[in-house]
Structures are given as C-alpha cells and as structure tokens.
Image 1: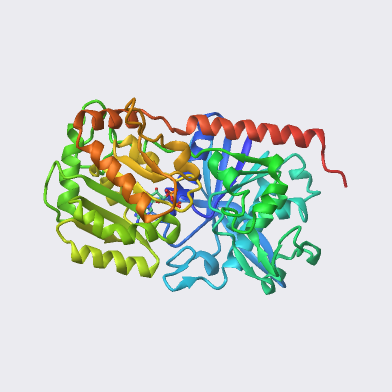
Image 2: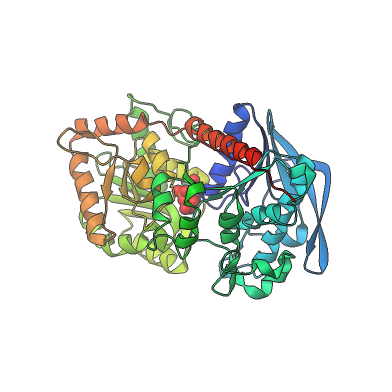
Length: 488
Ligand code: ADP
C-alpha cells in the first residue's frame, strides 16, 4: 500500500509529546513491512538542516486561505527504504521558535497555520496518489473533511481512504467561528453535524465526522471517550461513529528505549543481570545531587506538568512521600503553577527531591534507567508511553487504572506474586499514596521485587503487532470503499 502519514510532529524532527514518538515509529514499522510511506509534517525552525538535509521535492503547493493563496514548498528526505519524510515549508507559519505557542499561550493564528497544513496534505495527496491518508490529531482534522468535499471527485484520490487517529481528546483545535472562512469550505458545513461545536469551529470534530475510520490509541480509551466523563464534549459524536471506531494500542520503539542498547545511560543492562541498573541509579542520584543510596527507593516522573497527568493528586501528598524517606526526581515542563510548586518542593527537600523544569530527552532516558518506580497517576491517559518504557527498564510503574495505563500494566497480586506494576482506581491523593505505599512494601522484599522487574522487562509492546492491526484496518476500509465507491 501507499500510505501518506500526516502529523504535526514526529521524531526525529519535532516533538512535544507521545504523538511524535508514534508518528516517527509507526511509519517506520509500516515501511519495514513492505509498504511505501510518506510522512508529512511542517518544516519548523527547530528542525536541524545539517542533521536533516531535506531537498526540494519539486512540489510547490498553492493553498487558498480565504481570499489569499499561500504557497508551501515540500522538502524531502529519505529516512529508510520505502520511508520518506516530507517537510512542508511555509516560513510565515512555521519558521518560529516554538511549534504551537509561547509559554504565555497558543499562537493566535494556529487555526490558519493548521487549516493550511490540513489542506496542503490533501493537495500533496493529489500528487502522491496514496491508498491511505492517515491523519493525526486536530492539526490534521480538516484533511478528511477536504477529502470528502472539495477533493471528492479528484480521480487521483478516487480509491484513497482516510483514517483519523485521536491521540488526546483534550486538545480539539477549538476556534471562534470567525476563523471558518479561512477553510474555504461552504458554510453548510458549519453545523453541529459537521464542524460546529456550540458556535465554535472544532477541527478535531472534522476528523472524527469525516474520516473513513477513526482510531484512538488504546482499547480502554476508545471506550472511555464515548462517555460524558472522558469525551470532553465529543462523546456523542464518537458514539455516532462507533461502527468505525477502533482502539489500537501504541507500540514503542525499543531501538530508542531499551536499557540493553541505550547509549544515553551510564551502564547498559538487560534481564536477568541487573547490575547495570545500580550504576544508572547512582548516576541519576549524582545528576540530581541526591545521596548515592542504593537501597533508598527512588521514584521518577517524566511528564508534561498539567492536571491531566495527575499533578493535582501528587502535589498534596508530597510531604507524606518525603516522610516515607524516599527519593524523588521529576523532569517536566508545563503549567506555570506546577513549575513553581515543584521547584519549591525541590528547594524544601534538597536531599530527597530533585526537580528539573525542562524538556530533556537524555535526562528522560537516565530517569527511566535509574529510578526504581515510575509514577503516572493520570486523570486520563489515551495510551501513555512512559509507563511502557519504564517496564522495559525494570522501573516499576505506579499508575491510575485509566486508558492505556490500564491496558498495559497488570496490577501486582501478592497472593501469586504476579503483575508488572501497581494500579489504583479512584482519582484521589489518598489512593495514589496507598498505591505507592503498597509498592514500597514490596520493594523491601528484594527477591519478589526482582521478579516483578524481570517480568516487566520481558513485556513486549513493540510496533509489530500494532502496525499489523493498522494494516488490517487499512485493508478493511479500502475494501469497504471499493464495494461502495463514491458516485458523482
Ligand atoms: P503525552 O503525549 O500525553 O505527553 P506520553 O506518555 O504519551 O504523554 O508521551 C510523552 C513523551 O514525551 C515520552 O516520550 C516522554 O519521554 C516525553 N517527555 C515528556 N515530557 C518530557 C520532558 N520534560 N523531557 C523529555 N521528554 C519528555
């Protein structure tokens, strides 16, 4: 199959979260299976031109944005056999220091920047003639809309099917209705059945309503987002599409995230020989100016600092945690309130808590390798990657039983000593603390703890299985399309 993959971010070019990991790794896995994949994303300023010498692909796209015509040029770079990256250059939109906004808020023209991107994807598809156009998150939400409207009768796309993946329904690309004219779509689409959401323009909703199939990144989250509690206002729209809604768990790239081959960490290790992990722990303690205590449990966290990730549970129990005598390291950036709060905690407990308010990939690897436990008390979690990385590093996750966290972590059962982590259900600080205490109790029993570590490290969430599920879905929607082709 020829697959066009459209994402606002992808490793190794640009990353703010898990979407980038997926958009880098899934196309790679699809190409390894023999499919031909083009990955398209904006050419942001942060993409290092020396490291990624992309060349003009001879594709200049002219995109109508309201009364203007804006052009974008496609640069191409081969990443692997059958896997090519296409970087869409439009300097006024993407040649900026940040991808989506500054610390004081989103860019004011984000609607325009990503309406342009969504339409450019459809326009590029005319030249690339893919079978599948796989779009990700609200920044590409209008692509399936364009394919079903303005591009519906393009012979080049007659057989193409679109699929839209929701990585986090909390981010919908919601803009005031004055931005609608930028889409150059007819106002008949500005209704609650299509792109309108209580008087506003909702780009994510476009992807959900118009794509041939909709997926999200775990089975549990697929069920959750159809409920008012988790649907963020779009649960009804999703229930309307439940026949075409799928939950496919994200895989992880073990070439990047595995202690046996990780060049960022102090000493490589692999089960059952866990000596190297001790060296990584000492290294991490030094990094954060903590005492090099091999037996003091070290809790790690790497996260965007937002309510979604459970920081409103963690903040009130920090004192209790410190009283338990553990060490704690945190790497994250996000809401100013949490940045300040955790910096203060670091200052209050310099011997126990190491806080780094930053985005630092190398340090993220060191925490995965050096910590004993990994905390992920998310309010909701579409899939979550860090808990999966943690498993492979033998860093036992303590998670809330929601979304992908519930799907990937098996709660430890003291009766048969099975399980790969510790889960709690109710979203309360007390339940989080109890789960951590339960984990710490087992931690003191070294043979049992090592058994959990070895079991965790043996879990396999590589892309192979998930990529096959996507291929099956691609084939299914293509077959469906063939049976019932669109007629003029
Ligand atoms: P989300 O996409 O909701 O942020 P995920 O767990 O799916 O959460 O993915 C987060 C990804 O971003 C992981 O690869 C994680 O290591 C990385 N990450 C998050 N915060 C940081 C940070 N401050 N520094 C380095 N990497 C980070």
